[in-house]
Amino acid sequence: MFTSVDSLVTEEFVRMASINSPPAQESELARYLTERLTRLGCSVVTDASAAATGSDVGNLVARYPGRGCGAEAPVLLLSAHMDTVMPTAGMTPQLQDDRFVSNGETVLGADDKAGIALILAVLDRLQNDAALPCPPLEIVLTVQEEVGLTGCRELKEPLRAAYGFVLDSDGDVGTLVNQAPTHTVMDLVVRGRAAHAGIEPENGVSAIVVAAEAIAQIRSGRIDLETTSNFGKIHGGTALNIVAERVEIAAEVRSLRHERMEEEVGRIVDVFSRVCAERGALLDVDKSVQYQAFCLEDNHPLIRLARNAAQAAGVAFVVEATGGGSDANIFNERGIPCAVLGIGMKEAHTVMESIAVAQLESGARFLAEIVLGASRML
Figure 1 (spheres, rainbow, N blue to C red):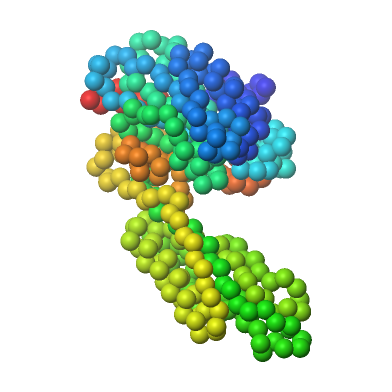
Figure 2: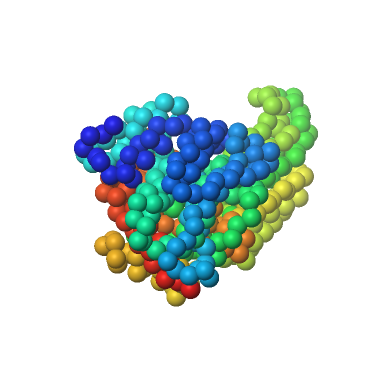
């Protein structure tokens, strides 16, 4: 253990960051958390989502009883996810210049074990100071967030929370994400006509050429301040001497406004349809909305609560939108208003991922002030 660090939140983080939990393999971490949450006074259930997600464990839902704030106090949701992106095998957090890093071969796992560590630290404080008021808490720790918010989408346990916070953003502690996009994925299949490339190429229709021509006519990347699109994968052709008969393209569109997302998706389909028709190819399109946009206005009670907590904790408060999704998108879609909190991780999803000890410690103070402030919200 790191003798220079004696804060509970850092000890919790180091312990969890040493447990590998890639998507669909969260059971070891879930066992640790079930035991830990139970010792901290929570009732814990594992939901029945594993059959739908393919994980080796379900989502964890823990409940902590409220006190000192009246029987009608609304339930506060706190959420983070148990899985991490890969590579994860042999994750061993190291302390360098008051910052946790990995060994350079794996991710660190601060996304999102730092978020879980903050929740555990606040629960420990509540358990050890019975004089502190708190609202009833509902703690949801999900599986497979990193592969399409799958665990949260398949959550089977009914929730009673009235509002909440998801601890899963890379901004400094004090950052609150109040707006996130709708995300649509598209599978486009261009079907041309095969022919021998050296003997009768004029009898073929190259799906590769048709797809390339369509993509070249479509603006991608940053479309406007609210909207992005990306062609992420392309696969096609069977041999060098055969005019390619089939090409598969995976694309995505995100926008903070649902209607703007639909416009951009429609534009992509229209261009592909026109080019295919002009070149004698066929087009198949499959599209699906992965999650819906949400937006909390500046005067929303969640934002006022977090602003007051930031002032009490001595951290700078910043409200911003994001182009990424999180479990908050799913909770908002289910009717539970949620914002996302920055937890101070840097360079997430890479082997350079890190988090400062100061961010972990200030994050625990900030979250504690949120819970204390929520005890006064009736």
